[in-house]
Length: 488
Ligand code: SAM
Ligand code: SF4
Image (tube, rainbow, N blue to C red):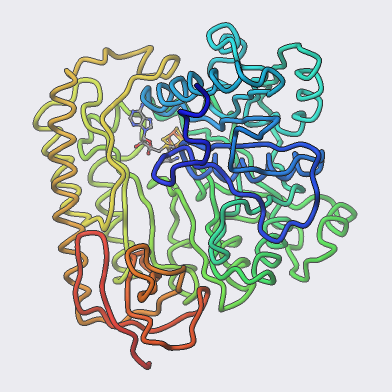
C-alpha cells in the first residue's frame, strides 16, 4: 500500500515539501517532513517552524516515509484549499498504518479554524497547532509522543517570532521572504484570515533590518517584505534600554519615533544598493504617497505593486467591506503611474461574490482593463464559515455563473499580460538572475524590477545566479519576456 504513494514530493503540487537545509552538517536523531499550502505567509511560517524543530534535534527530510514527524501547514482561504488537505491526510493515513510511531500535525489556518474538531474528524492527526503557537511545538510533540492528542490554537496579540531566525529551507539562494507583520484587522467580508491569523501586529524593525543584513551577507540579493497588509506596518521602538538590547547589531537610529512602512522600506533599501526590495500585499486603502515616493527614490526598491482590487463594482466593494470605491481605486492607480510611470501592477480578483450582477461583473472587467494589470490571481467566491459575508449575505450566484465569469476574467488577464509584455519588446532591463531556465540549461531565468520573468541565452559568459545583467527584450509570450544580454 505504502509503496503506491510518491515518497518524494512532486514539484508541481501546491503542497511544497521542503528539502533539508543546504550545507547543514548536523546529524539528527529524528526527522521531520513539512508541506506548505496557501499564501507566502505560510511558506514563511514553515521556515520558522523548521528553525524551532532544528533546535529540538529534528532534521528536515523530503521523504515522508522516513519522517518521525509529518506536518501540513494548511490554508483555509477557500473551500478547495481545505479539501486538498483532507485528501492529503487520507494519503498519510496509509503511511501511518504502516508506521504507527509517526506523528502527524496540522498547522496553520485550517488548524486555527477547526481547532480540536479536526482531531475528531481526522483520527490520524496527533497535533493541531495554530499560527501563533509554534513556539509551543516542542511541548506539544512531547505530549503527542505519550499518545495524547495535543492542541494549541491560542491566538496572540503580540507574537511575531521576531527573534527566531527562519531556516531557509527551499531557496534559490537569491531571493528570500521576510515576515514583517502578522494578522489582519481589515475584516473584508469574504475573508477568513482575520479569524485564523488574529489581530494585526508589526514586528520589531531592528530584527527585520538585522534579518535583511544577514541575508545579504549570506549572498541573497532580493528580499520580499511580507504581510497581509504591509502598508499598515507601524512599530514603536521600546524604551532606550530595550532599544540597546534589540539593536546590538544594527547601526541605524530610530530615535523614539514610530516606524511606518515607508520608513521601514527606506531602511531595508539602505542595507545595500545591491539588495532588491519587494513587498506584498498592499491594501489599496492603505498604500500612502510616502510609500510611493520612497519607492521612486530608491532604484533597488522594485517598481512593482500587488494591489488587489477584488471587484470593480462600488456596490460589491461595499458589500465586501473593502472601504474604497471603484473611482478611488482608479485614482490610486493613476497616482502610482504618475509617480512611477514604469511601475508594474498586479491584482487579486474574485468573481461571483454575493448578489453580483452581470453589470457588476462588467465593472470588474473594465477596471482590470483600466489598471492594465501585468498579472492577477483570480478566484471564484467561496463562502467561508464564520466570515461576515457568510453571516450576512446569501451565497446566491450559481457555481456555473461564477465559473463563467471567472473564465472571462482569466481570458481578459491573458490579453492584458500579453499586451503589457509586448510593450516591453525593444526595451532593456536590469535583470537579477535567479537560476537556469527550466526549459533549457543553455538559458538563464531572471526578473526585472517589475517582477516580470525574463529568459535569455547564457552565451558562455561567466555569470551565476545572483548576478545582475542587462537584457534587451526581443520577443515575449503571455507569461515570459525573451531577450539577449547587452552591455549597458
Ligand atoms: N491580504 C491580502 C489582500 O488583502 O489582498 C491577501 C489575502 S488572501 C490570502 C489572498 C486572496 O484570496 C484575496 O485577495 C482574495 O482575492 C482571495 N480570497 C480571500 N477569501 C476568498 C474567498 N472566500 N473566496 C474566494 N477568494 C478569496
Ligand atoms: Fe483578508 Fe482583507 Fe485582511 Fe486581505 S485585507 S487578509 S483580504 S481581511
